[in-house]
Length: 245
Image 1: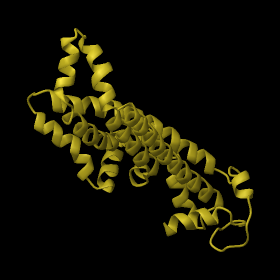
Image 2: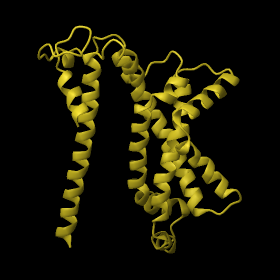
Image 3: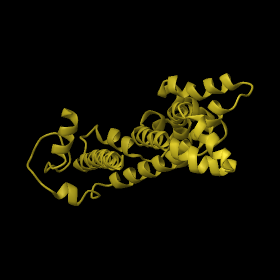
């Protein structure tokens, strides 16, 4: 917690160029957060990349997880191995390998190549998370839906999908966090595109600007707010169910 507290405190530091020494309290960093050149653009790129990567990785990973659990096909074990390999591969190796592939096909590095790279490694985490949820489902619930003359699509969207939602949401949050925070793979495949982790790394040589601390603190506070909101909603829902019983 000490580094997080340090980042939050120094987001209010009245610094000019560097943010290493406490010079006084100010709210200007929060009010004029985009005053530092490039910081908000880098943050926006990271959010955009994170959202697109999360949607793609979650969609593909969920379908793969369902296929691996529900269907028996040749090379099923081999496909599982290929899916899990990015999790066991060092990011330096994965990033360099993807960069070589993009170079071999003549792809210009930028936001598109970052998204492809992030989907590649985020999808593995999605598959692992959703696969565990699919394996824990009670088949009797889907059988009951089919007994009530529900079509395969109706059974999936009204029974299976709602039951999978906690696992899918968990996988999506993990995927976004991994994508937003990634530096190594991004650095290999970004070209001139700037993301927030790259901006912080570049700025660290001359002292991280207070605006970077502001954005970092804001993201942390937002994450805390989401967690607290989910916990409160879960507690209220549990109380309502308890009263109904």
